[in-house]
Image 1 (tube, one colour):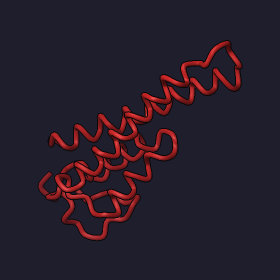
Image 2 (tube, one colour):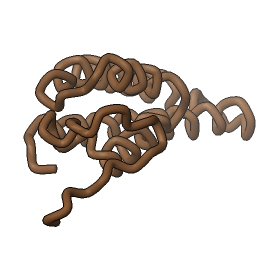
Image 3 (tube, one colour):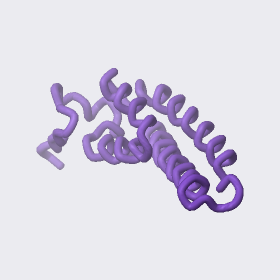
Image 4 (cartoon, one colour):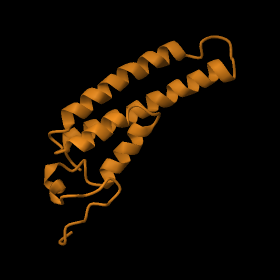
Amino acid sequence: MSSKAALVFRVAAVAEALSWLGLLIGMFLKYVVESSGEGGVPVLGMVHGVVFVLYVITSLSVAKPLGWRPRTLVLALLASIPPLFTWLFEKWALRNGRLDGPQRLTHGGVGLFERVPEPANA
């Protein structure tokens, strides 16, 4: 994984997960602990919204350079909905060669949770 597209995607995925985490902590403080004030929810909500949109745009932008099939792109986009799933998707994509670019995806039929076979000379 050395491409700029992969690095940009990884940063966006982790940032989206961290912004979700920040928002969840703020909502916990506001609604469960019932601390005085808003618990940062308005600011954290706006930050998360901006990072969410950047993650979606980044996913759409890197899909072609990384050689993602439509299914991988859909999984990346769906990962933005549940909290912290973008980070899980990023780890899965890294482990399965989805961040290595199109040359690594020549092993047809690799399933969602199957590992990509390493080349024999590696």
